[in-house]
Image (cartoon, rainbow over all chains, first blue to last red):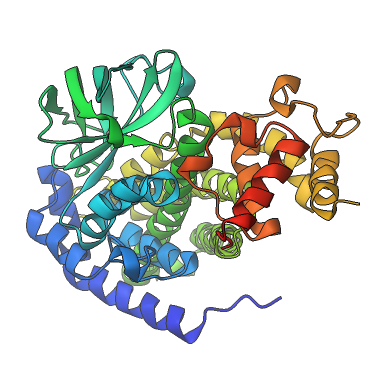
Length: 380
Length: 83
């Protein structure tokens, strides 16, 4: 066993960090206030190759391993969870096409997604459907050369700007996934604002009213939406979110180290008080533990080991519950300043809470992991 | 002795403890297969038998028994789609 980044991974991590420090960190609080990310930044991220990092060069990507992808999502998550959320949902769409799309869909979309010419968004949740994904109410009717989609999707990250949506629907009772282009007649989009966290993720509601899409836009086959397309995409999403949580927590820790070294109370720096040190120690330990779980999940992905599915659940569960505690303590250490918009830790706390809800709520994972881990013993 | 079937049997034996699966038992009819298992099965077959499963293979008939999976692997190997 060797747990150490390769020289390539270490170099990429340094480059990701520099990019985030230059182009995201200085502006993230403004993105949060404005509830949007500038298109110029999204273009810059695309130009860097960050939207297709793990796609093969054949598909217009960089062909990087999943650990490297995780390092990117950690660094971007440290800077701004909303931007990391773009990498997440965009990657989930690309992943669905890469894994289960037809040759035609791969050719049509993957290179454009990899270059950021097309932005993807993930259409699973609905007004009445959150964790209970299998109950989606959106319907698809099959005709000779097309499908007709009717229904509503809600809380769709980057729905305001995405060009391509992965939509889950019941196709005559069979769960199925489809690609729907933004300019498709019958699709209308309504922005959502005023969220607690990841406020710049440009959420939207999607309305599908007799939305007619070509039959070749199906991803996989009818009836395999929940059994094969959903697990692949959610696995990518959870992996990304888990790393993003490590990033938020790292951001909290670095902010606290800086603040505790500058702020004096009762004649001493905060860092010299034992109760502050305890909180910092908890942060350090938990961040390292979450990162190791992410490494484990990423390693299994890179060797195509089936255990990666449940290891990713565990990483997401641990990282998302860890980061809410870390961010809570970060605000505590900052005191009144931490409650102010002048300091980023209040954003970290709001963003952290969202991490416990998206891509599998804490409660859903708490009932799933024990069950899945029993299955996982088959691979031991 | 069919080595492929032996590996698939061993996999299911670990997964479905205490369940007697015949080569033609429909695993989906057992009611114990969840979405994680379905995708893990795809990954297991790809990794163990060095084949790539794609959208055209998405048919329950390709995965619903030891015989079916073995047949899929043989067909894939025959047309040269080893990963």
